[in-house]
Image 1 (cartoon, rainbow, N blue to C red):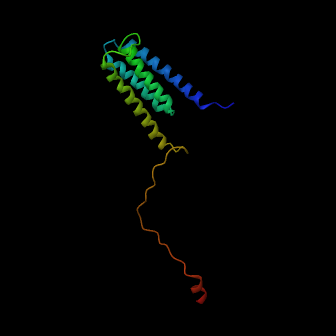
Image 2 (cartoon, rainbow, N blue to C red):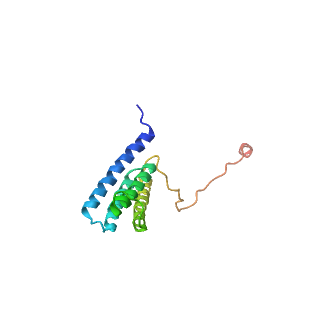
Image 3 (cartoon, rainbow, N blue to C red):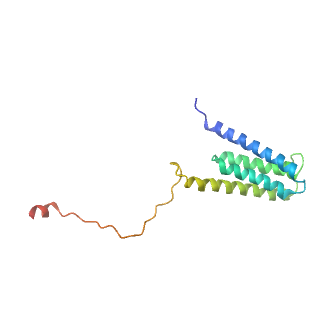
Length: 145
C-alpha cells in the first residue's frame, strides 16, 4: 500500500507538534514567567533543529507557526491569548528566523551530500592550456595526395 504524500506531511507535523509542546513545557518549567528571552530561545532552538532535519517545507512552516503561537499564547501571555502587547510577537520573530536558518542549513547540507536529487553547483573551468583541435582535411584533398 502506497502512502499518500499528505499523510507523510501530517505525520511530520504531528512530530513537530510534539516537539514544540515538549519544549514549551520545558521552557515553562525552567524559566520564570518574566524571562521571555530564555523561553523564546528554547522554542527557537527546537523549531530550528526541526527545520534542519525535516525536508518538507509545508511541515516546517506549520511547526514554525505553531511554535510562535505557543510561545505568544502560553509562554508570554496566559491561557492561550494571542492578543496583547506587541512585545511577545517581536520576540516570536526569532522563532521564524531559527526556522529559516535550519532550512538553509538543510539545503546547504543536501548540496554537499552527493544525493542524486540534490542541486549541483555550477561547473567551473579548470585553468590550464587550451585543448588543441585539429581540423581534418577535405576528402578530395586526401584523395589527390
